[in-house]
Length: 170
Image (cartoon, rainbow, N blue to C red):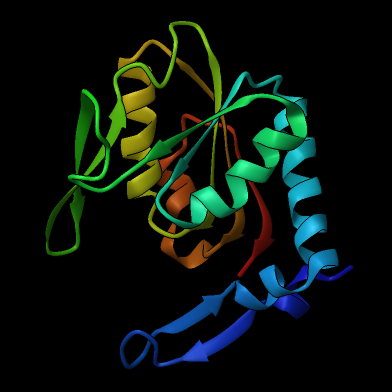
């Protein structure tokens, strides 16, 4: 199955000059979605992970089914003000300004092998910040997995110290 057939290219979204890769057609097709999850399952099994961490919000869509398939836990990474208990925070740079991500302080146990799953690898800033939080909590990032990698944005360079897996490359 060619999963690229299920990714819609939306020109000039969210602004002129951007080609947006829309994953919702893949999500709408049960066989394509199942195939993507199966490929992510295989990667997570290959690195013997104990936990999936997924950034808000599409990391939830791809990470939760993998965690359920493999009978391992899932921990969300959220934007400010979304988690109800004590959190850890990591700030990271954007092109213009900064952003923050949060995890519960008990989301990752010391020594846990963690795979971060998200829909898209662009510059890698979100996942790099997520890696830092996992490591501060004592976890070991054994992989970063994505449905799509935008190679021109060089996110793999940002994540050069990690095992990066992507299903589709553009």
